[in-house]
Length: 136
Image 1 (spheres, helix red, strand yellow):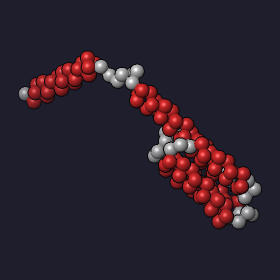
Image 2: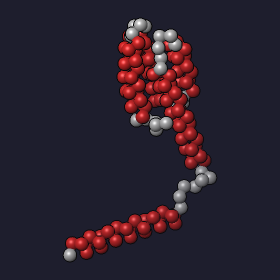
Image 3: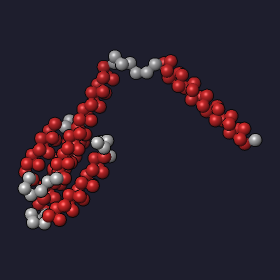
Image 4: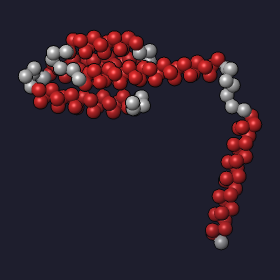
């Protein structure tokens, strides 16, 4: 008896979903000629480019050492100026600051300490960035 009611309920739900789908198809979707829709596509492309630049900044910051710190920080700043999204721009600036702090906190002859600091930085920063941008 319960199985019969369950089958009827399932069939009813599927029927309602099909009717809703047919209604949305009949009413039409988004108007492709609408300029607001085109702006969304452009914004999506811009955000994807910003995410890519932020991932590049993270890679640069994670590979910083005492010999290349100034050059890496300049490259990160350059990438940051190309990013339009304010949250990703702030995150990129934070990567540069953390990289500078990481290098200054470790002695130049302590390669193992620098590597441990890099791993710790990369794990935390990658998790934070992955919450905002898709993994690449």
